[in-house]
Length: 115
Image (cartoon, rainbow, N blue to C red):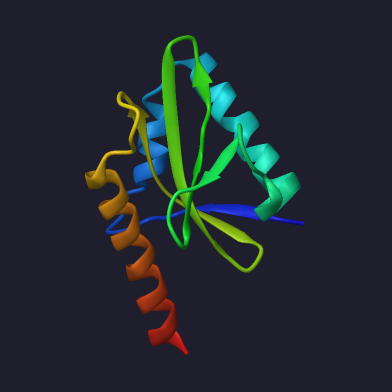
């Protein structure tokens, strides 16, 4: 069984803030995709999820004309959700990738420091 955890840094849950800022119907679609992620784990693929770097993945919910992206990475059976945004272009913005990668690296560094 797989689980998800929302990444929190300095008291902020970036993905949670993004999700709570969406409409009720958009939030429902995001919840559905997260449930799929928990059921299928790393085997979840397009059109629901896509690998976007060596360690980062994106959930790809959409509602109407709104394309949303939820970025996450795996640590064992845990999907760490690090950010979310509305996609406006074909390519995932470099800024979003950089932020998600930094958050993932901070998590890995903190985990290593606790050992």
